[in-house]
Length: 436
Image (cartoon, rainbow, N blue to C red):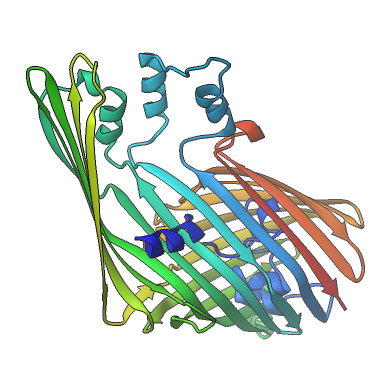
């Protein structure tokens, strides 16, 4: 049980594709405008496109996302912060709180990606990224919460089973990405309005230190009423498979592939098509275990509550070694376009389609748009939004300092809100690039 909780606590978010201080500021609509090292996670073909330097070195990169699908800081202040000694919720308060949780259940998410090392030279790019990702989803059946909030309104005697009370997976690895791209200039002979067609390929090698997947979970709740007392019982069962390194040796290794196309139409338009993490999986062959957990609790409550209830609880946790197993790496397609309105003003739009459901990847399409503006030669300003996918509505802003040999970029984004205290999470990214 402890091992499962440790791994799941490392990450409770969706699969991170490595957004950075630039991409986040555009609302993650970056497949068309990404260049150099930044193109590794968006479109490897862009590695071959002009970026104003021959060599670039990503010195610092840190991207953090903490979010959920139900609650904001304003929600916390409204329901949990009070001057009263006892924070008693009215019936309308309880109904309002339950209504905040969607029918798909409560999702708690976080993602952390760091760029430990990355460089681009001519048509090549290489990056090393520690990645911690995953997801947890609970209360898909809100009847369990409803019983907790409105237990007195449930029939006196009841017995109920709940399936999939907790779903989740978590993954920690070092990701090594390599990409090569080549611009085919000959296409202009046949299509004069297209000066080039860049083709890029990439490979991602995963060295994993930890993984956890909840295979199934269930809960059983029962209340039995007697003349002067009642018996309340609850039982929770969960089964999960894990692999956790106890030192520096990895427990799993795997790879995936990237493929991309990029072109320009006349002088103003750019187009991008990419497939990220195709055919990827990680094979776990060390420290592979299955954990089976049962927790039981019982309370005898006397009426009219003039005696303390009698309680008992127990838990059984068994662990067994299992055969090696594979975990699929989530993949997605990105289709984007950008229009250069002026030399210092570019608009971009993007369509993202998840290709599977691995690690919280969503097959719900995501669309978005962004704008890049440079009022001064050294001052980039960015803004963007996205809608759909696994994040819902995201709005983002970003800026930085762009000097001849160094670039610093930072961004901030909010979820389902236009004001930070109403946001259902926080996204932020910062990166420092050295250019030659």
